[in-house]
Image: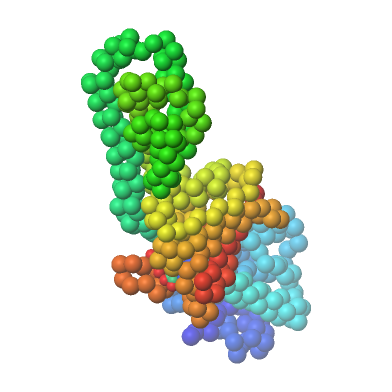
Length: 487
Ligand SMILES: Nc1ncnc2c1ncn2[C@@H]1O[C@H](COP(=O)(O)OP(=O)(O)OP(=O)(O)O)[C@@H](O)[C@H]1O
Ligand SMILES: [Mg+2]
């Protein structure tokens, strides 16, 4: 690398020689000291040196020179090389002219002639030191700016990656939800089919009555005495009041005891079947006159048909409510909340939705115990995603119990937190596996039965709610406790 150059300008040769000698002596090892006898020559020299990649930290110029003045020269240099330091040597004490030069050329100093050699060297020394300090600062500044720009770029990239990750996670949750829904569909379809079957057969029953028996009604009532009509309506009233559904075993028992009662009273025991069917099996004394009537069978048959009609409408009511409940649960489960905002919701409603969908798997061999606190506060949450949590936990429990055992769900409040504990009586989780179960793809199930994503997703959703999940497990008892702050 070339040594940096200090340029000295003066139209007086002797002065110029003096400066050059003094500077060479003090700074000659580190700097070239070049001279010019006029402003014009100095400019030419400046340009030539710059073109040849010399660094020029300082120009020292006489003020008054024929042609271009020192002040003009330094002003030009300031325009082409603003960082170069400039010192003006002057024999005059015209302060106005000096201030002018100081302002326009951005002078570092001016030195009055005749100068003190020590002062000149010190000033020059300070000037070049400041020049290199400024340059260093500028370089560092540039590096800092570049680093800052890179940092900004990285931050931007990172925030985009984070966004992508978030949406991937959201998609993953949605995919898992839809996969669970797929698994549930068969069970749910069956669940809807059962009430539909009940509705169909009830409607058939009603339509049969309407087409066959309705027209017989007027004749039937004409054939009954006033008293018998009253007995008939009392029987109907009593039967409609009867809400207990009897098992076949109970029916058999009631039929037997009723039949022996009727035989004792010398009444044909044929009536006992119909009476039990319509729910009349005790306090039959009030119906004795009716049962002793020669037309007893016809009367009981009509009562049976009318009660069936009433029961059919009841069945339709219950079955359509059940079907509507399942459809509602399916709808709320499959709903995809795209707003991305928390909403106020009731945790228990979410759990009930999930249980409705699993009803088919639960009803055959699982004893379901629910301990829900009264007046559970509503919380701001992502209800759809929480449904995913209950689904995965219930699903795991049912799998661990092979759909046979006890499933207990407790919901309660403690220290401004909602605790949801799901306990099953299944195989349990060995201690060694307990640390791994929340890792993605950790599964002990065969391919197709489990992907190992369930609890990973559960954990992510709970994290999103600033909550936590704890597992306690021994063989025969596994409890997952979800803790969600109320805020
Ligand atoms: N209630 C539980 N009882 C016993 N083991 C459980 C229970 N819940 C989870 N596990 C264990 O934790 C593992 C990981 O559960 P996770 O729900 O993450 O995945 P998976 O059920 O195997 O598959 P996926 O949920 O993706 O269908 C399970 O394979 C099982 O070994
Ligand atoms: Mg699972």
